Structures are given as structure tokens and as C-alpha cells.
Amino acid sequence: MRVSGVNIPKEKRVLISLTYVYGIGSTTAKKILEQAQVPLTTRTKDLTQDQEDKIRNLVEKGHRTEGDLRRDVSSNIKRLKDIKSYRGTRHAKRLPSRGQRTKTNSRTTRGNKRNMAASGKKPTAQKT
Image (cartoon, rainbow, N blue to C red; front, side):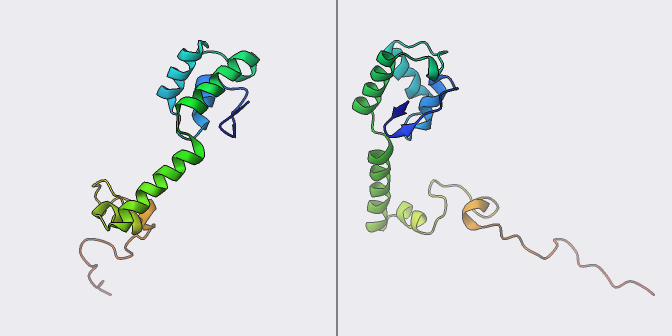
């Protein structure tokens, strides 16, 4: 089954497989299935054609997903960079933009650079 240009898994429950679409989380998927009157425990392969069409229409008409949403997010980040806001500069430097500390954490964004020197006292010369 394709929804918003994404092939969703057939063996999983519809509730889980809808979350493979960018912009749809578990809460939104639950609301969509309630509107389409599809049980939450149904597997994707067991859906009827009518149920598939209802779900597809609800997702494509009522929610921003995939390309449109990605474009919106990237344009919002570009706007922040253009006006040189603090958040925009943090995005440009690839650092956390929501106030997290960077002295000890954010290793994935800053790279795995660990100090080579051992902390504490230097070892004293050994007697021979």
C-alpha cells in the first residue's frame, strides 16, 4: 500500500506502518484510523480496498506530509539563517539549537573528539 508516495510495510499493524510516512506519528496515525473507522489491531495486508482509499484520502487531504513538510521545515531553517538569528547560527554551525549543553554532550553533532590526555595527577617518576 502506498500513502503519500511511501510504501508502508504489509506485515505490521496499520497504526505502526502509517508512522513510516514523514509527518505522521503514532498520535496522528491513531486519529486517522479512528476517522477511517479501521480497528487499530488490523494488519496492513488485511485492509480492504475501501479502507485503503479512506486512509489515503485522509492522509493526503488533511495532513502535510513528505515533500511539502520537508520543504516547509527547510525553508523555516533557511529563514532563520538569513535573518542571522541565534537559532539560525546554531543550525549553520550544526550545533544544538534548543539550549542543550555542549561542553560534555552533543557528541554526534560535534564529532567524537575525546581528549587524549588522562585527567588527574601526572604519574611521578619511578625509582629504579
